[in-house]
Every structure is written in structure tokens, then in C-alpha cells.
Image 1 (spheres, one colour):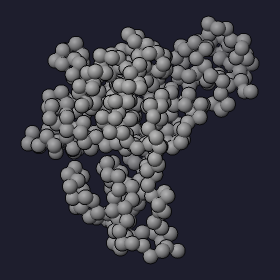
Image 2: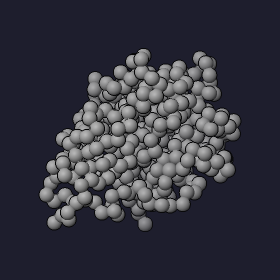
Image 3: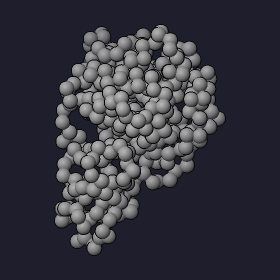
Image 4: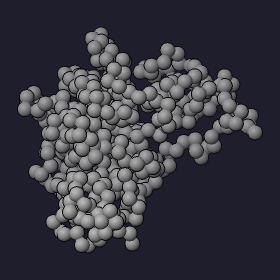
Length: 58
Length: 358
């Protein structure tokens, strides 16, 4: 299964290979290794509001 | 090869093309065309015909100038809206999209604040001599035109310009009961976002008027703009999802459900509307029982403006025709909302709404 996760509220797309360096998540970090306190950099949604997706959209 | 055609056929407006000779119904008071019969020569005429609210338009083939490879649509695709389906209180009815506009938008001009507001709208709003029925027809049709243009070109300047026009429409609804109730009566029930935006806008303003009366605690212009623009975020949803006639997959539905936040963000970034009014866009899919989206707010966590818009939104979704269902009558829609969806709505607001609509 892909390591693509997308925010249910704003569509922000997390890809493990890219990470989220601005928020201290280095490239290569798998979704499971992101701390639970981490929130969506676009809209502030908590990690639990992300869905694993087959193909990113939007 | 084309079979010998009947002289006249009826087609839904989506299937008209340049070169067809159309006959419009005479009682169609609101149409903007000088004649009831004419040859379609431009895309502009096509656009107007498609916004007319007419379900079928008669084509006189003997007077039409059609390309050699054109053939009359078969019964199968001549009317895509007639698929019968049982009407249920399915939870996702309001998620299920209104196509922004099925026609290719490539040949539409880029609108700007100088051209955005249809002249006819300004005229209808300012002409003191117009009878309520004519005024409501004209304002309704031109409001849809305005929303079509705005959704095609939702720039910050256009949003600002539209707000001024929506303010005038709001004033009309607030000040002229007869025209306002006429507008509710003549609403179209097609499935385009621009029609839906106007219907929800008008209905929500009526409900806000009933709730807030003459109280000056509410900026009705801001509110009106929020109601008309509640689905603005759909311009940021992928076209194949918006226009998909069948059921959405889980991924597609997830994507569709980002439209409230996207619309909210679009307005925030372009610095349009007050924060209180932007809440309408963000919260119009939240439900009183906490089962809505995007934030699953419940009860008092939802702003009253969001609650008003939610009721009008569901009502218009039920009374509109969709590719998979026919339109419900006003009465049936209210009954269904009362009997099967009452947990979705604020009870007090809903009973006001029933008083208003019945």
C-alpha cells in the first residue's frame, strides 16, 4: 500500500519520500513515525483526520 | 448517413449546437431573445439557452444548418435526466455534486469587475416599474448568469464585484416580499452549481429574514454573499469528480468533501467577506448531530449562519433533479427532512423554515 496520506479537510498531501521539512518531518519519514501531535501544515487538522489514499487528488 | 429526420425534434439545452434553428415557448417571459424562433449563430446564444431553465428546446431541422456528420441523438442519450431512481434520504445527497458547468468553458470570456454583473440584472433591480413577477423572473435569470460568470472566473476582484450585486439582490429580497416569494416559486431544478447557488442564496436570505427580522445585529449583505457563495470551493474540486454522473468512490468523496474548507480558504486568501460570513462556506455541511463535515461540529458549535445555509442546501438538493433521481415536490422534501433527517438540523430553525416554505 502506498505511503500517500491526504488531509480530509483541505486535501494536503503527505508523501513519505518528500516528508514535510518545514514542519520538521524529514524526507523518508513513514506516516507511522510522524508524532501524534503533528498537525496538517495547511489547515491544522490532527493526524487522525488524514486518510490513506491510492492516488492523490486535488 | 442520416436517416430522414422529422422536421422538429426536442433536445435538452446541453445538446444544442450552433446552426440549429430553435423555437422557444411564447410564455417564456424571461428569455432574453428578441424572437421566439431563430438560428443559433454563436456560443453566447448557446450559453443563454443553456441557462434558460428550459428542459427541452424544439429544433426545426428543416431550417437548421447542421454539419453533415450531425445526427439526431438516440432516445438513449437525448435525455440524460430521466433515469428513474428511488428517492431516499441518503446521507450524501448534498455531497453529490452539481456540475459546475458541463459545457466546455474554453470559449467563455474571462470576466472582470467591469463585465461581471449582467446589465439585465442592474436593469431589473433598478426598474421601479417592473411588476413583481417580471422582476423576480429577470432577477433570478440574471443572478444565475452572474454566478456562472463568477464560478468561471473566481478572482478576488470578481468576488468583490459580485458582493455588491448580491447586496442589491439581498436588499430586494428583504424589502419586497412579493418579488422574493415569486423567486422562490420559479426556481429551476436543474443540477448546475450556478442554479443551486442562487436557489440556496435566495432561500437562505428568506430564512435569515424570518429569523432576524429587522435586527441590525446582522450584516445582511455579508450574509447574502456568504449564502450565494457557499459552494465556491467547488471550483477547486477536480472536474471529473464534480461532473461524474454516477456514485463517487471513497477517494472521490473524500476529495469532494474538502470543498467547504477550500472555499473558505479562497475567500480568506483573497480577503473577501467577513470572517463571520466565511463561516457559512466552511460550515454549511456540518450537522446538528455532529455527523457532518469537515469538522464534525455539533449543536451550538455550529454558527447559526451555517445552520441556516445547511437547511436551504439540503432542501435545494432534494427538490433538484439529478442524473440519478427526479426532483421531489416541495412538500415531499419537507416531509423527508422532518421525518428522516431531523437530526441534521437545528429544530427551531427547521420549524421556521417549514413555516416559510409551506
